[in-house]
Length: 540
Image 1: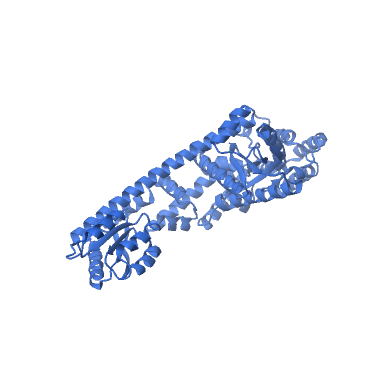
Image 2: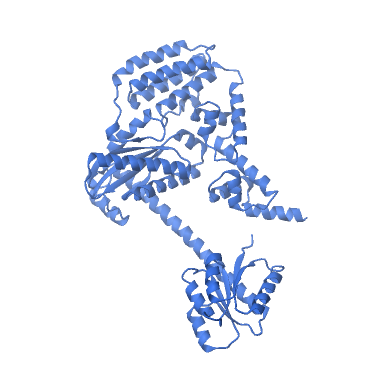
């Protein structure tokens, strides 16, 4: 698509203004790059209007009452540094020429007589300068992003090696100085940010999209930390991010608790608001010095284990840890044995959910460490499959029970849905639920759809629904939604020449860059290339 340059003229002579207006009207018939957006009759009015319109190119007379054109441009340049300035003059004055050169004016045109060829040449020159500036800006931005990504990767590696105790304190100190981490000699606490519904996240997004989103999550976390004072955050591994909050003077336990709760709540809120990601946060205790970092991380990790029995968007601190009752393992194992014996083909969904609920209630009241509980549920999952497959060998799919990143509630809900599918073997129940999900997507396509919202509408666990959808449709939920959104955008483009921002708003995609990436992925063209092709087709 041809780039458009906005133009603005300033002259105290009405005849010159009219002449230039006619010039621009005629110019658009052969060159649509230049568009006149405003005019002014004096230097003072020119400043006011130019600051409002922010034109790409400003054409001004030199000699005007009260304020000449060069003085006006000198006042505008600090606020409109990228605007290109062209001067018109009826006088061949060396003084004006000197001032124009000093003010770095792009072009100096004699307006008596005013030759249109001179104006066109000046506009072409201005367009060339603006194009070169944009190219350099894009190159700089690309370089800036590359530097940030390398810095991000180095930081991630540094913290991973640091918490494993693989970096001596003197090397850590040197690296921290280069990265401008000066806060570890002050008081600090470590915190872990854990993504909720991570099983759904890693199955629904490509590896490249996961990396982009994780990078964005780390940035949002760090920006939130910095609004509270000193600190840093980075991607750790899998569904976890590590961060540090630092302060200069020692705080009371109550003040530290308040700071952690406030920061944690802000991180949860910001990630949900800006990236539509749900997380929970776990804080460790107060520490000081490089030698305590591994211990600080271990404390935060221990607190994060409580998230297994929590809901989403939770903030946990050492002051609010759960009490565990591992001695209840044997009693719970007996409950699982009885549950397995009870299951028969004629069991209804309501009866099954009631039994699952009794298991959940028992463990909620008598929490057992995840390291003990998770293997028990994995074994239950396999026992169910064996029971309804007449003892046949387990399939590869069953060996991949997505249990590692789930909470206890999510694991039980997944097992409930999985079990009911076996109980209803041969019945088209879940096809009905997939059809309901597709209708929900269709009705809400212009909104920001989430896997969790769709799963809730069809009354299935998000992770199980994700697996079932992909198995039924041979396509992931997010991929299906994105494809439908791009199809909608194509329908819109066939009716009207929408801007990228307008298309994003119409199809419920917040990020313009992500929309363009998806559009090209599905069509092979950018939105601009697609519209040009459509225009050519319409002209035939």
